[in-house]
Picture 1 (cartoon, rainbow, N blue to C red):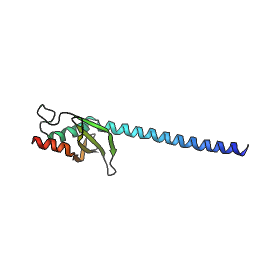
Picture 2 (picture 1 turned 120 degrees about the horizontal axis):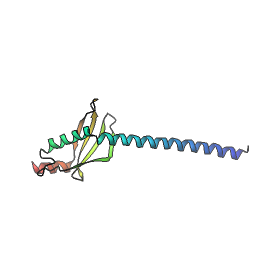
Picture 3 (picture 1 turned 45 degrees about the vertical axis):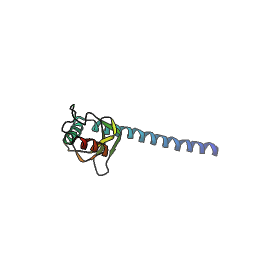
Picture 4 (picture 1 turned 30 degrees about the horizontal axis):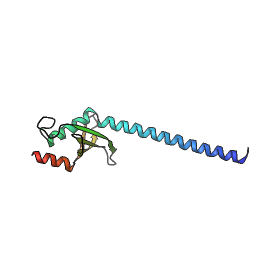
Length: 130
């Protein structure tokens, strides 16, 4: 077999292996993202969010409350290296008004948050109402 043809086959084989590896990695990343979305949007996770909103704003989701709606920012989902899933939840469709949660699995299908971060914008909105 001529030397050039052999080199082309070897290079093609290496490129194919790299492509397969990258494809597998992309599939794995997609599956992980879906898993994070499933956790963040679960009924049990939503209980954590709503409980915190009601502690911050006792009238939340009522006509006289500051917090009227919330949305999980799926682009913000990431695993915390120290454990848990970091989730940013925007309030009233305002990207500047949010609470960040670090969801931790209790081992029984329920969750709690290791910490909360209330954005300055949301804190100001709540402070005006107090």
